[in-house]
Length: 337
Image (cartoon, rainbow, N blue to C red; front, side, top):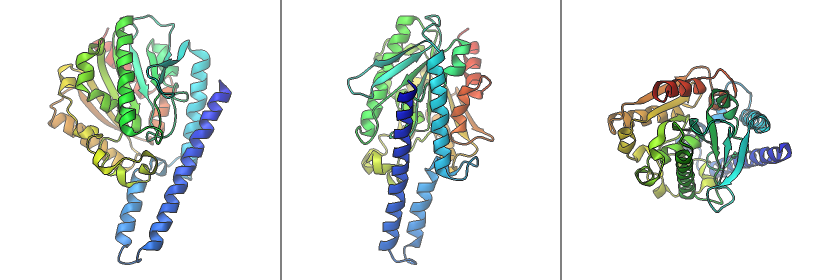
């Protein structure tokens, strides 16, 4: 298992460095083709947009963005390895036909009716993996919460609409599993691009109307997410995602309806980090305001976590005393027990 996780880590690092290399190359070519003074504002605008959507550039913990990302991959790989080695589980459960459509259930020794947290990893739909995203189970297993980690195919082998469809299929699988087990309740948590995917799951009225067990939804934690993709189309992220501009609005949770979630009285926790970029914090605030003012959702909470960066805010899942676990436990005690 350690060898497998090491291979996953190596692939993640290679992809990260390749994307950065493409970005730098693209900037150099652009600068060479334009007149310095007349077009400087356009160049700076593009560079600033890339920076705003580069979470690793905003962390004060390390000197370079590479160090930030490599530390994150090392940390979650080791923690996921620990979770796999110490928590009873069932891995690589297929929910679809392609290689990425698998999920892991951590905590198979817990009572059938245990609450479930479904975790969806980030990585801008092109990095990270299910195998190194089992770490939330370290703290949640101790409070008798099962963790289900969803995997999905990555760009560019899959399109973003493909990924959204896959994650919704995984959610359907989870709800049916929860119904079969008699789970007290289901929660979703997503980090970064994973928060975007959780939001797209919640936006699917058809999923909730036609899936057994969907009434067991209790809440969701959207952690440092991106909810409006219109700017993302014009950043380095799209070099791999390859999203046409006309897809941006349909794929943006900010333009979806969530009235069916309000009717179910599910709780939404929208969270960002102090050391996220201004754009990431703005996206969280605007998504909260739109849901609160337009969809009239009442059971919502917005928090900017002091002293944390884009990666620390989810790495803390590994600690026994962490705010994400505390929020979940408080919600369970208030609404399920």
